[in-house]
Image 1 (cartoon, rainbow, N blue to C red):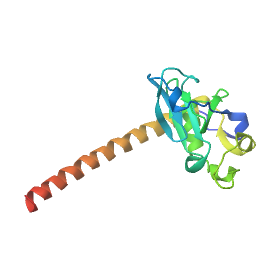
Image 2 (cartoon, rainbow, N blue to C red):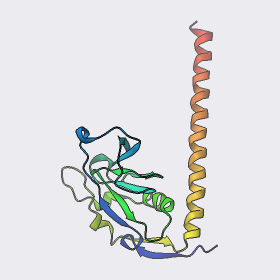
Image 3 (spheres, rainbow, N blue to C red):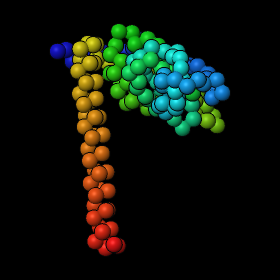
Image 4 (cartoon, helix red, strand yellow):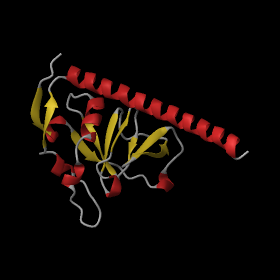
Amino acid sequence: MSFEWEVKKLGDILTLQRDHDLPSQERKFGKVPIMGSSGITGYHDQYKAKGPGVIVGRSGNSMGQVSYIPEDYWPLNTSLYVTDFKGNCPEFIYYFLKQIDFDQFNSGSAQKSLNRNAVYPFEVKFPSSYKTQSTIASLLFSLEKKIEFNQKINQTLEQMAQALLKSWFVD
């Protein structure tokens, strides 16, 4: 497996697009996730983008927050979404973008704002091999799932401990 990394501009790795308006009064009940700047914000009966998708918060407190969706979705106008992965692994792009400090691209004054054109010339070290990208993404996904599982175990143990202490000292 090749672990060669090259210096590339983000614009050479992916293409971002501003999302689509969908006022709440125009939303129709469905199973298609509506992706806003901080993840799923609702559901609709139509999609605007084919999955998998990577979404980056475009404005406000969620500017630079990165989300991943494996299925078709409706990207909301509060964010940017990847329309072209340019032959790169979408899951790797998701984890890769999570490591970028998008605050350095803030073009807003009163409220944070992200302009895709400011992001494109940013240079990064990037793995040249899709297989390397996929391997890294798979490992990170497995670690993320293990962390979530451990957090659920911790919550359950904490609830059990609280119930036990309550039964000993309160009841």
